[in-house]
Image (spheres, helix red, strand yellow):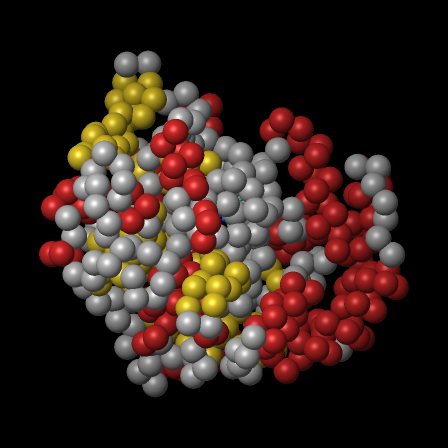
Length: 434
Ligand code: IMP
């Protein structure tokens, strides 16, 4: 039985949570493999609407094991709040497992994230301010603190002392900020450790164990591939590896690349981005406002799940998307929010960029180039009728079918699933993924 990865294909917020929620039905294990609580999923099901930042979207199925992999940066306070919230709404969290190898977000990471952003001025990345970048900096610098360290105060104390001493020197010396007190920090993390202890476990054993017994495993990415540290629009990227390549998915749960059978890329039918950085197809006109506020009255508008920031909006960028298909090695696409385009008379797709009279068909590495390119658009007629009740591809309006076919051609990958609304059943399954 396959291990399937679900990865965001653009700059995040493509609707992965909703696709994972749908696919999780057939999986025994659902595992998050990257990022931290900078990510956010909105899930609507019969129990209501939930915003998840760390807990995998499979948690709503009581029989699934939900795993937070070693590739995730975990803020224990946020995780405990999320567990408490789920439990208070009657969701069973007893099958949640947190990798003992995951890195912890510490108070100095959050302080440093904000100080670093301020110091960059107009070149700020536009981070979520959750401490994710500085957490990965400490990980690579080999002074990170891991979930396993929470289990024994004797392990935790020297690690916190070393890392905090260093962080305080940077906070005060480089940024002129306020130092963080050791005793308070330690006491809080000892308590977090006591509360999280029942959830801590060996993630690799769970993922591979299920796989070897023939069960389906779903690996859930966070954010989008164009925010990938290696392949994204650097430096306007996140500090983890959202993509399935760069080792993201396999590394993030401790398995090998050959254990993965399929990679599904989730793409919005248009494009959004939060934070700063290049966005060639960005729109500033009425269409942007229409798309951003579609479904706003039901909390479905294009506003960040984690920060509430309005998302930047643009047409589907097939150049960036095709690049993402290639470096992720995607086997299928899930196209989300098709219904958001229902009322547009004309829909555009960017098929190439023009710069100084030259045609560019692959995503340039240089920010200074990407900032100056002009998108070349192909215009397709809209369908101007609701698709929210459609469940079969053949029942989609002809123009919507043509749009999907064009996306497949331009992105060089088949569309296996289309979402036409926020609820679990509002989906058109073209080819079953499991
Ligand atoms: P960080 O991950 O908080 O360091 O932010 C780095 C960049 O990634 C910023 O542009 C953020 O807006 C963006 N980012 C981080 N997480 C998400 C997400 O879940 N959705 C969309 N953008 C995100």
